Image (cartoon, rainbow, N blue to C red; front, side, top):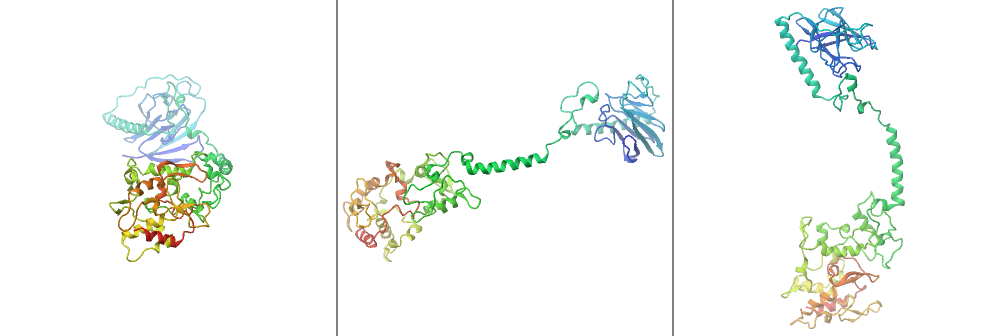
Length: 482
C-alpha cells in the first residue's frame, strides 16, 4: 500500500520536527499510535488521518470522546477532508494542519482546562449533525478500503495486551475513569533491601547450625552420636561425635566416606562389608540410619533391617539385583546330601586370615577346602555360651573366656566313615540366635536368627573372636574334621 509523509511539530513538548512515512497516522494515547496524545480525555485510539486519492481525510474512531474540526464535532467513524489552515482538536490538544506538497504538516499545541463538546475557546458549541454532500463512487470505494484498513488496525490492537490494559470491565462514562495503574507504575523495592536481608540471614543460619543443630534436623541425633565420651572400652570410632554436624555433613567428602573415615580403629574397620553388599551398592547409610531421636539405636536398626530388606515381599532392586527370603525361611548347618551349600569366605576375609590360608594344600579338593575353612572358623575361636558344651580355654592369657567350641560341641560322632550331621542342624540355631550388646541390652531376641553371626558385615571387626588364636590349634581342628 502507498505510504504517506507526515511532518510532526510537537510544540507541546518542545521537540524538533519529526517526519514519518506510514500508510496512515493514528492519534491517541495508546503506545502504538504514531501521534501520541497522552491525556485522560483522549481515547487509546482516538482518530486517524489517511491519504486517499491525493487528499488527506480525518476519521473520528472514538465513541466515548469527541473530535472537532474547525469547531465542528465529527461523527464517529466519519471522514472529513483536511486542508491547510484547518484546526483539529483532540481533548486539550490543538492540531494545526498545513499541506506542504505531498506531505502533511501537523503542529501540536496543548491547552489545559478545555473539554471537547462543552467549552471551546470560551463559547459553548452544540454537537450538530454533519451534512455532507453525496460522495462519488470513487470516494465510496476509497472509504471502504479505509474502513478495512482501520478495522484491521483495531483488531490487531485488541489482540495484544498493553501494559495499561484495564483488568476490570470498563465503567460507563469518560475514558479517563477506565484507566487503571499496573505494576509497571509502582516503585519496586530497592535492591539494597534484598542485600541487607541476605547479610542478616546468612550469619543467623550459620550460628544456628553450630549452636542449635536440631533446627536443621528432622529429629535429634541418637545418644551414640551425641555423647562426648566413648561408652565402649574397645572404641569403634576414632573420636566421640559430641553432637557434631560437620563430622558427617561436610563439603570435602560424602557421608559414606566420612562414616568410613571415623569408624576405622585398631579393632574395627567399617568399609569392609560383605562382597554381596558391596556389589549391590549397600553402604553404611542403608543400614545405619540417624536423626530418629535420642533413644534410637543405630546398631539395633541395622540388625532389624536384615529381615526387613531380605524377604520375598521386597520388590526393590539394588544395582540390578533383587533379594528374597534367605535359606527358604530357616537357617542351619550348610550341608545338604553331603554337599556344602556354603560358598566359603570372601577373598577379603581370607586375606585377613593368613593362618587359615596356610591350611590349604595343593591336593585339596573344593569340598576339602570348604571343610577346612568352616571348621577352622569355629574350633577354639568362639566362646561356648548358652546350652552348648565346650573345651577348656587353651589360651591362659585370655582370662574372661572359660570354654571355647570344640568338635563335640556340634557333632556327636565324627570321623572318615560316618559324621553326625543332624545335631549341628539344631546346634546352629542354639548359637546363631539372639544377641546382646556390651551393656546387656537385647539386640536380637532369643530364638530369632542372628544374621550377622554368620554373615559378618565388617570382616575386620576383631571384637568378634578370641584374639591370638594359636596356629597349631587351628591345624589340629582341621586335621580332626574331614
